[in-house]
Image (tube, rainbow, N blue to C red; front, side, top):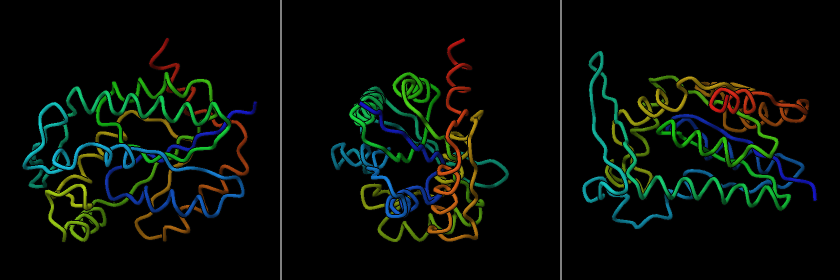
Length: 215
């Protein structure tokens, strides 16, 4: 059986990952399902998605300041770790059955990346970076937080979540393609990704990352 291929969109919160995934699905000739951090984050109990009631077993969060700018940092607990590890195995199960997957990801800790590398090793993986300027990321964050910044289940994002998550998830990463969508549309972002995948049969970034952590 032919294995599915995986497209990982890695980027900070509010970088446009979810919208780009949906646009890519509609553009792609091959069928793709979307399975990423948003899908599995939304599967945890609702009260654990509220920043004022979340248990440390799921995650803790704090804001720190650098150059007078807020950075909202999430530290995963053991339950969220297990949820994410299981999510990588679930994605691998889809791929193993020949189903293509596009996956929005934020790697909040190196252990998440290492587990993902192990789970996805047998498959063709495209590593795509999504960037947005600090100013635009903050603007999108404010727009999403009209529902209340502490309610992540409804899309709320505290100040500095984009800034910090982008810093953490892009640290020491290697990509096959990098796209900055600060000034381009989601459809244009998805089109660039599709064009790259259509003409690139042998992505190398994932295998390079795997070798880095498994030499």
